[in-house]
Structure formats: structure tokens, C-alpha cells
Image (cartoon, rainbow, N blue to C red; front, top):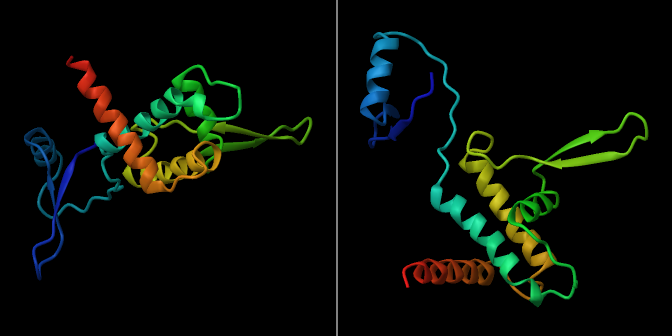
Length: 160
């Protein structure tokens, strides 16, 4: 059973986990009785705003490729996502048994695969990759400000 739980930590009192919604509460009441001991795996729910920022970063890179000296252009968001992920620690590493060659494949970014803590680490690594490969004279603050401004401008243009 998967439930969303809200954390309460009243001063001087033990930590309390409470089902976050009425349906979660109903399911928990049906499944457990007082005194039951349950084991839970805890993950922080992924932030939608955090997820949107990372995709805004990719769109920002795609939209500003003429600034890079490579002369080569990435054509689509998913290709850029996979390529950028290969430059982070979020990869599966396999060894080809025939050649001994190391083969990296990017991990999924889906909500089911990465919780908020992992996605935060990916976000940080993607910012570093972006600065190292594309925006060499920028720091992380400048990159995030530019992405957020670009995202806000694109959002406003949708309404015009």
C-alpha cells in the first residue's frame, strides 16, 4: 500500500506521521489497527516546481544553442535530456562481455524512479554540466536566474 503522509514534529513531542488525504486515512484505517507495527519506506514527494525547472533548463539550452561554438545542434528535448544525463552520475553502467567496453545508459527521470532528494542531486549535477559544457563564464546563480526569467517570459507569451 502506498500512502502520502504529512510529517508533524510538535516541539518536545515525538514525530507524528499522519495520512495526508481523506482517502489515505480511510485506507490506513481499514488496513491497520491500534498496536500494529508497520515497516515503511520513506521518500520525499517530488516537487512539481523542481521538475518544471529542470525541463525549463533543457528548453533554455535548446533555445540558446547559437551561443555555443560547437557548430553542432541538438534537435530535440529528449535527446538533450539523455545526452545531459550521460554527463551525470545518474546512469546505469554495464560492461559488454564480448569487448569489455563500458556502456552507459541514462537513468529515467520519472516520478517513480527518482524521489525529491535524488532529483535535487540530478538538478545540481545538470546545472554543473550546463555550466561546464555551455555557459562557461556563468555561475549557478546566473544560470538559474536566466532559466527562471526565460521560463517566466515564455509563460507570459502563452497568454498574448
